[in-house]
Structures are given as structure tokens and as C-alpha cells.
Length: 290
Image 1 (tube, helix red, strand yellow):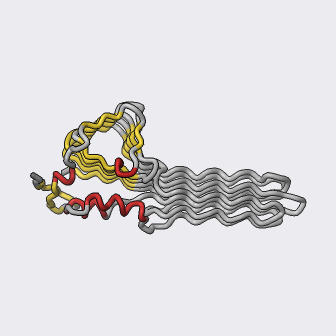
Image 2: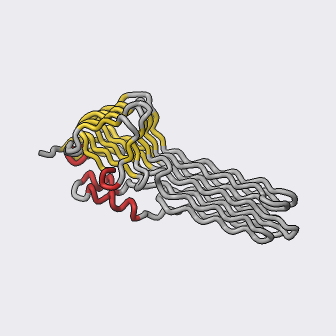
Image 3: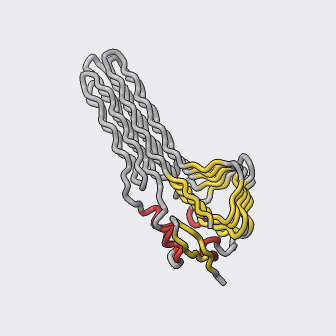
């Protein structure tokens, strides 16, 4: 029989349906004693308890979402993460051979902005432009997870919060001149962080819970005499870590950091250096004690 429990959110007294929030325990006790990749329907678990042993990882490399409903204690001594499993980064542009470098491709859209790719360095011919960062549009990937909670009032709060970091744009390729010269390739954009939602009665975290964006890759140096360097890739945005619990202890970390910018490649001869990409935007870590 589901029951209600009062909680305070943004100064307002509310109630939540604990059976929906903590799940029905149908997956039993979870024990992560090896690296474990939960994908597809398996990315939504309803445990009676969950323990992640030290040095091991619990993650989702495909959809980039983990939803863990635990009618008991979650003990994290290892790592729960969706680092770089959000939206993909863009590809770097190719360097021009006595030609203009090509433009880097945009990052894939998530809901937290990634960094733009840097432009390629010019020689006689211009470097390619950096790819745009993924924008803030909602993607279909995350709509599927929202349906899990379609019939509870708690779902309404969760469904508006499922987000992922956008990928960074790829760096532009460096231009080459006519002597001949070939520009360096642009760096790839970093992937965004995914999303982790954990609801449990007690959280003991002495490990890591993270949804970090990946750094953009560095652009390549000019490849042949008088070639411009490739632009650096943009960093992926951080994702979302959302934690709901009665009690929590431990000294572990909870992060959704942005990916760092990629450095532009050096030019060769008369070729200019590629410009750096931009860092991604930090995601969010949200905690609700009820």
C-alpha cells in the first residue's frame, strides 16, 4: 500500500508517494562487484538495497541515464557515473591541402549547452570555422525515461528534470597554402554528461557519483609546410545528478562538471595556430532530503 510522506522543497510543504519514489524492490538486493553497464530497460532498477564496491563502476554507456529506486540503503564505495554518456560531441574539420579547412560539425543537442569548437588557423587559405555547441532543445532520448513515472505525482517533479549535457562542437580544420601546405585536423568536441537519479531511504557515499562532460580534443598541428593548425574541440556540458533520500552520510563526491576546452593546434611555417575551443557549461547536482 503506497503512503505519503511530507517534505519541504523550496520552502513549501509537499507530499510524495514513497512507493513510487523508492520503487517496489522487484530487482532485489543489488551488489556491484564488477564493472556493470545497465542499458535499455535495465537502466531503471528497483532494488531493496544497492552496494557498489570500491574500484568498480555502475554506468550506462548507451542511453546515458541511470534511474535507481531503492527501498533501503545505497552504499557507494566505487563509482556510479554517466560521464561523457550524454549527447555526442561534433567531429573536427579536415585540414585543407592548398585549400580552405573544413568546418567542424556541431555537437549533438542536449539540454545544457556545450562549448563551441575553435576555428582552424589560416595559411594562404582560411581555416574552417568551429562547429556550434549543442543547444538546449530536449531530445527524444530522454523522453523514454520520463514515461517510467507517468502515473505518479512524484513523476511530475522528476519528468521536468531529466536532462543531459550537450556535446561540444568540433574544431575547424586548418587552412593550407599553395607552396603546398596542408592544415591540421580540428579536435573533436567532448561528449556531454548524462543523467543519474537515485531515490533511497539512506545514501552512504564514500565513492563517486558523477555525470561529467568530457573535454574537447586538441587540434592537430599543421601537417605540411605552411599549414594552419586545427581548432580545438569544445568541451561537453555537465549533466545532472539528482538525489532524494531520508538520510545521507559519507565523504564521497557528487559532480556534474563541464568538459574543458580543447587547445588549438600549432601552425607550421606561415600557417597560423588554430584557436582554442570553448569549455562546456557545468551541469547540476540536486539533493532533496525528505
